[in-house]
Image 1 (cartoon, rainbow, N blue to C red):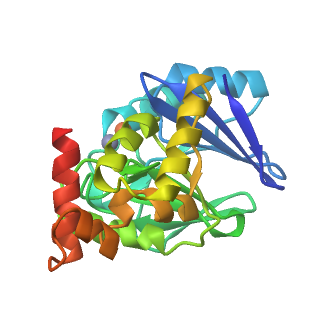
Image 2: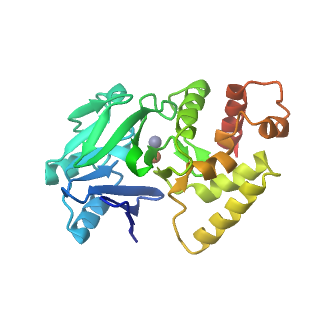
Length: 262
Ligand code: ZN
Ligand code: FE
């Protein structure tokens, strides 16, 4: 069920958790230090650690929602690991030891991650960007062909957050926290029915899901070409929505509202 990605000096293990979450373990191979990206399910995370004989030294939380922090305390009890979370969600991250904000560096052995603040889904949501490896753990901010619901933030905030992620290098691998891709694809084609790249990606996604294969990670280049939420400032999207004179925030807000009703 789990999948291992080898980044030369760093490994990522990805595995399904709960109904549609993904758990991720990142391990620095030289030092053996290992971080869980969010804690959807302490038991599932422990099983993977045990199977791989890895020891958990850190937890990196992206935001406070229970499907991202629910395993914090149980894992801390087992491993005495350091828990890192967003400074803007202080008080909401169980067991947190250290709070980080924009541009802070989080180190795992020889592996460094930069914190990018991406408010919108929650007001303190953060992303961990491993620049050397071109890897980003984006939590519930960006999904393959979708984005997180606006529970706490405004459309303007979320649009700004998504633009920050869109500016990452094209080849950046985007590790999203949920397998929502197939439903996102069904919605995306209602926004841009004439987008050939989107059509291609949808076909690939359907084939993967038919075989039960994860569609995560995705890449920035794929998302730029076909994710309607990253394309709110494209003339083709504005035209498709009959909103050619509107600003991108209004177009983004319209796409988000349509998805909420979809
Ligand atoms: Zn969430
Ligand atoms: Fe979530």
